Length: 144
Image 1 (cartoon, rainbow, N blue to C red):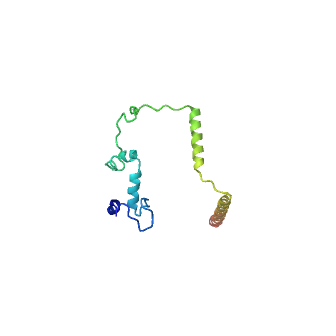
Image 2: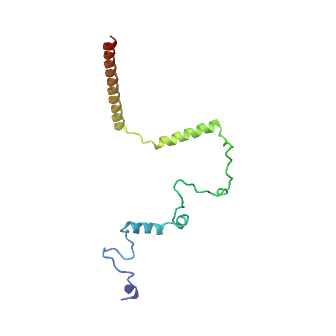
Image 3: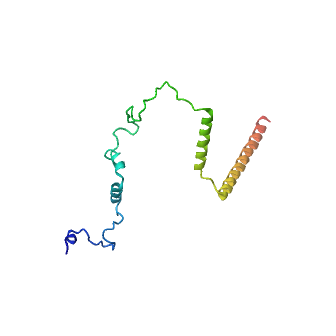
């Protein structure tokens, strides 16, 4: 028996896996710890010890004035507006971006939706027409 065997570093797992190969963590805590150890050092240090700033959720944390290298703008100064053409182009780009997010229905869904809308419209027209006819009869009897 060698020194490494006595220390238990290379014990064979009962699951039949090869020694030295890490298996998937069995518990959620082990998975979190494994993810934390695999995280790049920049992200874990940026959290200032993994704690959140104190205060209520709605409180804003004051940033230093030179945080981005520019002074805070005055309240009474109105921001400069872009030209009309630049605003129109921005609007078109934003509309196009929103339209790309839309989940468009396929042909079968479109036929189903159209049929549902048409049935609903026919029902509402019949309801309003029936109520109109009933009120007409009642008004005719009362004021006759």
